[in-house]
Length: 139
Image (cartoon, rainbow, N blue to C red; front, side):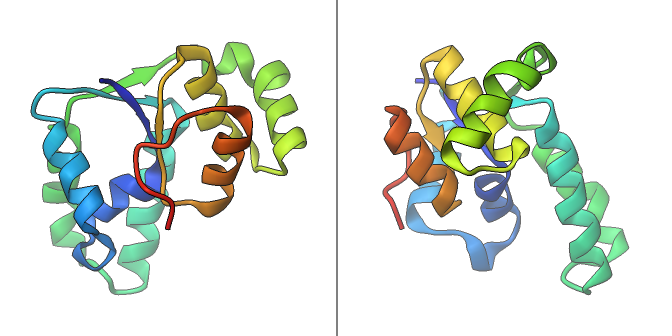
């Protein structure tokens, strides 16, 4: 079944020290499945990679291989997020005390009626309150 993928889970696939058994199983599920992300996901991923480089967690030479590995995953980008930003996303952010970025994942999960994969506790809690199933067990 398709699922909404957030940046925190994606980064667990990039940085082995953030991986769990559950995130690894989820990654392996993409052999037969697809993950769906809002347009902001690529900017979030890029930002994490930039910060990781600045902090010495990865070196500049590793970045192209990491980006290629991420781009090889079956990830569908939802391009309607802008249409919902100032109504659904804004309202969900206010209602659940989320950033607009995290609320975008919740809005997408609700709109597509799909479960959400996140390691972010605040987003996971908001998903549960809003009736969105979580793909990963709550940490």
